[in-house]
Image (tube, rainbow, N blue to C red; front, side, top):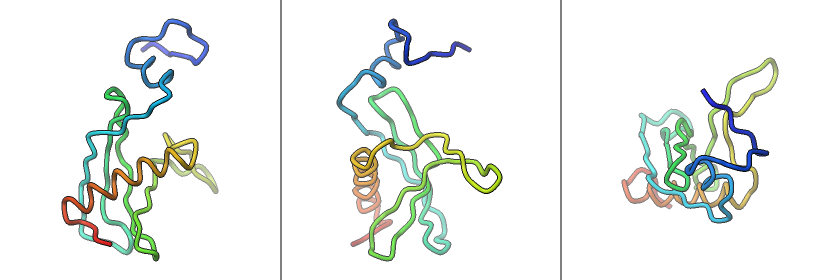
Length: 111
């Protein structure tokens, strides 16, 4: 298995598109509903720039009637280590809005 660092100047095509792109394209939103347990609606996955799939994203409802995303993590002692997560609020909102649109489209969530 090859390890690619951010210092590498020759990146494979797909990795280069994700790491070097100023535009983030979120597509192939999938939602897997569950029988609602408290605020949890289900789990989802999505594709970034047609080459990186993120899975295991939990979809919750908030008290304000919005969808909240919780990204995959593992528990370490008293905290969590996230496998992946947006690095800024704008990216989080972009992804959250896509999931909210998909949830409304399939009738899972209504405002």
